[in-house]
Amino acid sequence: MCAIRASEARDEPTVERKADHIRINLNEDVSAKGVTSGFERYRFQHCALPEIDLDRVDTGTAILGRRLGAPLLISCMTGGVPEAGKINMALARVAQELHLAMGLGSGRVLLESPDVLPTFDVRPLAPDALLFANLGAVQLNRGVTPEQCKRLVGLLRADGLVLHLNALQEALQPEGDTVFGGLLDRIGELCGALDVPVIAKEVGWGISADIVRGLFEAGVAAVDVAGAGGTSWSEVEKHRMDDPVRRQVAAAFADWGLPTADALRGARRAAPEGIIFASGGLKDGMDVAKAVALGADLAGLAGPFLRAASESEDAAFGLAVEIVEVLRTVMFCTGSATIEDLRRTPRLVASTASFRAASEILRLRTADAGQFLDITDEVLAVVARSGIRDGVVHVFSNHTTGAIRINENEPLLISDFQRLLERLAPTGGYEHDELDRRPGIPADEPRNGHAHGRHLLLSSSETLPLVAGEVTLGSWQRIFFIELCSSRDRSVTIQVVGS
Ligand SMILES: Cc1cc2nc3c(=O)[nH]c(=O)nc-3n(C[C@H](O)[C@H](O)[C@H](O)COP(=O)(O)O)c2cc1C
Image (cartoon, rainbow, N blue to C red; front, side, top):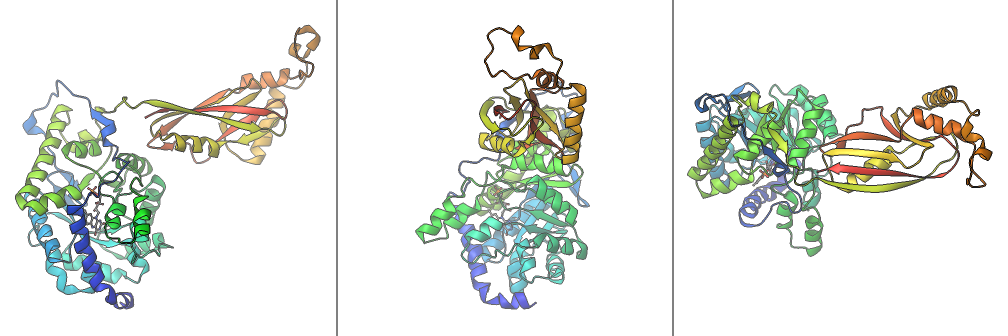
């Protein structure tokens, strides 16, 4: 209660900000620059003989206890000012008519000023929609209590509470709340206290796999990755600034964030059974279909619905119908009778048009024979610099007495390996070491038949899968360069191939 009182002085700016956001989103170019949602990297493979009837294709799905006409979410946007109210009402009627999911904008202003309820109160118009209330997660660190969250959900008769994670937006706003320390614990406490599902979302910069895992462990019911490629909130905030330096700071983040398709795939890998929503830069029904085929339970659009609803309710309705019809047609032409079939379709393929390779040479100075040099971080840095997100990483030693191997970096185990190699290929006793029988060798040629023998038992290289920007190493796996001869200058070629 105290925090809300303390921030009452900010009522006016909160309301003004909401009005600014709508105006800027409708009148300025706020799209991300230099980063795309990533859905354009995929294509459906046409099925000439789907073996189903179009009128048997069912776009319906069930999420969080509600039956939906399609896995489509009108993403959280607005409330608090009269124009927001009009937009919410138009979108609510669309959600009701087509049985869709809909999110409302941040309810902080409603907690502060209950008189703005009519601008949020869409439940009477959309009794069957899956409806979400919304709050900035950081407000949990500013004194907003589980009781107040319950009150918000109750006021709106929502089916769940969406918490948005918007660290970058808050950092750019002059009035932003940036106290993100310990927030995951607060989210966990709230999940335990609410009797409706809590959903965590970003606002257009994506949620990486490690954070998705942490959020589900904390108790959220679903995660919306809300990735990059659509509305960019650094661009929106830039248009609210007069100070040229601050504008430049905001402009630096125009290409920030995880492409939505990559974030979605990472999230699906991190939580194979979790409920995952995908939003951020989805434009149309084709993107919605691709999101489902990449593992999304629900696909969301914000900016496109805002623009359509500000034109007219008919335009918003038309957009939603078009999305569902494209989805239905994709399902038919991929032989997917149900959303579950589409989710499992093998007919979504990554476009190979952008296949490329990047390589770097890693130069090392080894210390001694038997040294296991952990080069994992260097390999991951090369992958990150390559910009390639899907493919393989090949790590190749350019030497016949220096090997590449993946194993655990545990000192006792490494001593075991060193002794094992000594037993398998002991030092001495190799014809290769009889230097007088090898014409033309340099004067300092080492007697290292054992090192070559050990190398033969190991390998020159390892190949690792690269999926959605992550090298899929297991938690204990590390990449080693293994020195089998003596202290040397060594080189390792790291090649990343993919798209
Ligand atoms: C006008 C507007 C207001 C928004 N307000 C909120 C909000 O209050 N809470 C929230 O979680 N996300 C908010 N968003 C973010 C969207 O839900 C979404 O994550 C983001 O815009 C990316 O989706 P898009 O590319 O389809 O626009 C807003 C988006 C718009 C366009």
